[in-house]
Length: 41
Image (cartoon, rainbow, N blue to C red):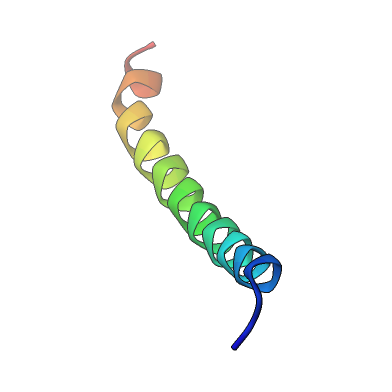
């Protein structure tokens, strides 16, 4: 069994990976939403 420190580190790594993909998705969505606004200016 990994000890608590190892578990925390593993969790952190997983969370960071997840956050990266979430950020990527949010960025894509925001860019899609902003497209019509940019066109009308």
